[in-house]
Image (cartoon, rainbow, N blue to C red; front, side, top):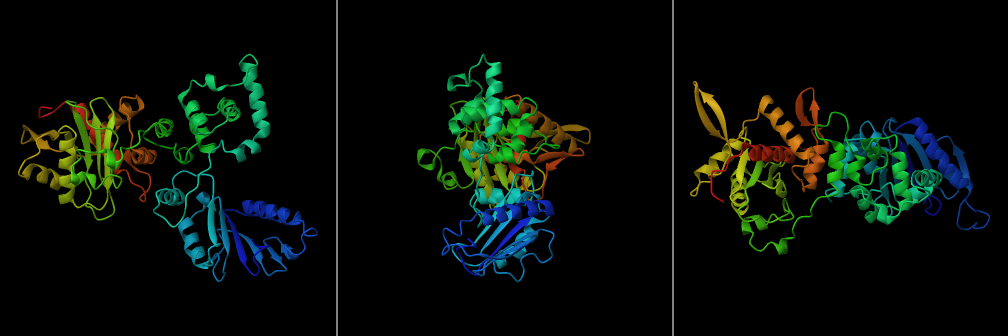
Length: 452
């Protein structure tokens, strides 16, 4: 771009000096191999070159720097900005705050962030929003089996094939040999048999978590969080490839209009309720002011997830109507509502309407020595710890099947911080994880106050 666009500026940013130097050396090597003699009218000559700058005779300039540079990009007008290994920046948002105004406002101007994943941080939040279409940036993900990587790993792949043949009577891997579920999914997604043999070769001395971090096949694998995660991250990454897609709006004939308006906009239905099957719903309530989400997770007695709902702009009084309609649609589902905070208001509305909702979880407590039942589930350190352990067991032992991708993504960042179960970052959410946990509480209570 610098060679073919006169009088324009370009900036390459890295998170440390060595990386910046390596990147800039590659640019210099490319420039040295430009066939200027063959195309003298196309490529301008080099005016000057130093440690962190290249200037051409057409007035264009390429600058290399690091994120530690004060007032990064200020005073510059840039055609193209490359932020290399952006997930490793100390404060990505501050970097973008100074660089975005420096970008030229033309069709060809770009800010590009490229990186390997580095767990859950500002970059992951930014990528997640972009992948949902909620950002001016566009998300791209390149799996380990893309053709570019296959060329890059050519020598390793050759050794892996030799290793595989030595273990399998001189035979290469064939499509009919693919018995493992994950291998089949990778092959169907475009992973070559050579790359599958290489994958088995690498997995000899690496755990799947380690492999996912270095060689992800999906973005959820790339951002996998080992650390103190509550849920088995390998299991989460595997499950994301097995979810059932939600039913499309035009295929839902009997759904009430109250709910149909939210299909594809917060409400996802994966299966219609089976006649006479008991259904269980976990409900986490928020204020509806745009911060935390009000969520619903519905499971059947068969362990399958039938529906999920998540919105952050629904006030409690409207959410009560949605909860009631969803509950009735799914065989008068047994509702487990967290009564702390806004949950109390929701419970009151469910019981005070003209046709009171009867199938609601009740929690035992003692009042002046007398045993009593109170609507809703009370969240405290003891009850939450037990509920999370039950949900973890049900998920990891394949006793329930989660179809909501957003729930699985939130399970990646749900961690145990010195005995406190919470989300890893204030910028991320765990509301769907909580409603999933509450659905398990409902299932394990072995109660149902109505006839199905």
